[in-house]
Length: 459
Image: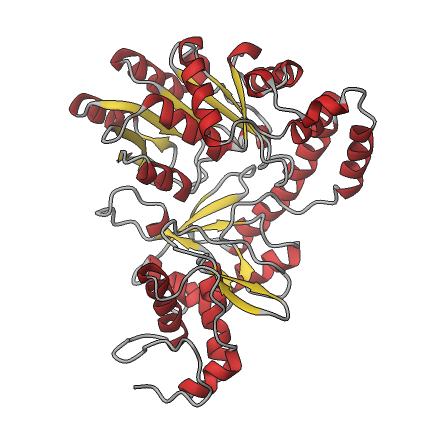
């Protein structure tokens, strides 16, 4: 039994655990949260006291607590300590509270930091003077003001999908729109096809709704239509969920020819499409969305947070008229409505042209960071696109994805590995996703890419 001179309420049991001690402590935290030994809101022991109790360097416990925070298990409050957030389960990491003071974070797929505070201040000032401001404080008929639905429809049409305001839902982000779409089209036990690598959010939504995910094989151009056809023939499929534009995590861009081929297959088999197109505004040269070829079965998601600003947690979901009422009911079940105040701010940005400026600035910074990555990772097997805020780095042997992720973490660089995205566990790919937008400066991106390059050479 561990000596406990400071009478700490919790001490991790480390006996018999292999590997780095800080990782073992983080693993014990995860296990104790899951079993209920550590309950939400519990304050963990001060790092220095726990280090003395375990006979460790305080820096080791500090790294363990930070790793647990990155896993979404803990939250830190300055002057108060570290507290248990609750059960893990999703595997989704939380953003750093101060990105300058911690590891270089390539985990989270956020837009690049650009100087836009003054623009938002101007729009917020205008918002307060809106003549119908009081109406924006109320619940809205059909969960959205009709004027906002018109702006949303114009944005969707601009993305390449003809949309009617009456068939548009305004949701609290693209993830919310995707969840509503799955709720509308699927029931527990149904099969959904998606890319062989997909976001943690899609995997999490499928798990919550008790859906079976099957991955469609991919190459450097996106999903392979022939494999999609095989899956459609051999499975009863309720929906296909795709990110064809700057795919997350592989950054592939499905060609127009493949989009037409995929649309024909879905139409032939009578399977609805859910198309998450949040990265489309970042393209210099737009490609027609898949949903533009499937007007009777396409659920099209156009989001704002990736291209404009993270705070604009809004997305516009366009769908065939016959699905609208059911989808509206699912919106009410999950949130009732997206904030009319936030949507008014977004509408002003769109109508007055400021959205175009934000997109232009975002593209320019992404170009700059992708160009740097191409130079610094020259000779590596990378899938990327000049407009994508992320890239996919395949690892050379003998590196394995989890091993490489841990090696980076020891050098204070964070990235997500294959396990976070893979749909079928038998997939042999070993890769990491590098999100170039999250580090707060170009210099931090350069520093982090340098460490990745050095770590690759340490195989």
